[in-house]
Image (tube, rainbow, N blue to C red; front, side):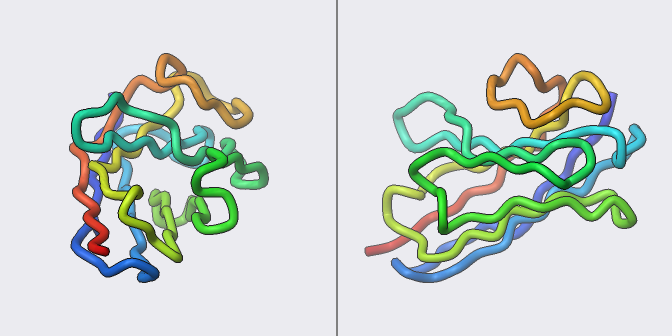
Length: 126
């Protein structure tokens, strides 16, 4: 089982930026794709962004496309989510997750992931 530790959440004004990080240990990070999900207050968890094992392919939810960028640094065993032009509707607890199986392309369904971070709160004030 892989361990994921997230950091970088916080309070930001509308239009601001945050960079989330997800440090992984316990698995060959370079062989696994990653995903970012979020759970807004009172709502279900939803997919935000995903990246394949190589880091060469990414996919975004329509709500964040053009504003968020997902990446992974295999040398540092860390995935990132750069969030720009933040909106109040981006307020949520953000989770990173790692694929169950290696060498997969981008996945968006939560069942494709078997390890999750503890979550980090992102609050965007209007």
